[in-house]
Length: 176
Image 1 (cartoon, helix red, strand yellow):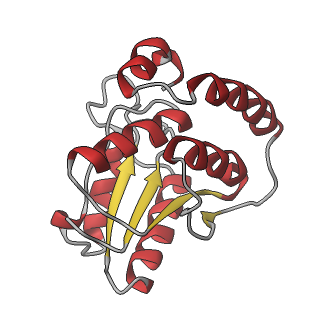
Image 2: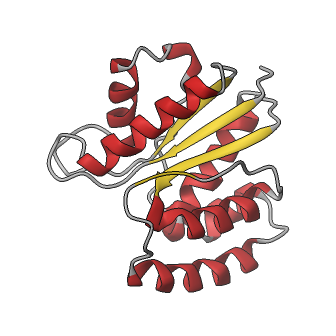
């Protein structure tokens, strides 16, 4: 499949069995971006974690929200393994490759406080500068925990460089 743009929508944990306002905000930002791209894009909702007993992944929550905006189901590829931002990038890349999606640009949608770390991770995992503008929802100010995670993730990404997907999945599973 040849598309100009891949929009990767990063999940966030929900409380209970319904999407949080933060997740809904990320979805709305994704819909606006998708429409501005004149629908020459696919969307990858990425996230595997959900509350115990819920039975839905973050990706499934996002899919349901996207469909409410009449985004065509065939333009959405679910990534349901990721438990972290590194996992979002890693498993989204594998999903793109396994579906032979050829693209010119990757766009990441998340919360604004999360964008610096997300951008660093995606550029490292995808080994590309073809990461689009920032598309985010909410407060721009980085939370203190994000700064600590950025330091940790930088170290992990350095250790992953040049390794095969299988090696990364086997060795770094706790960070995916």
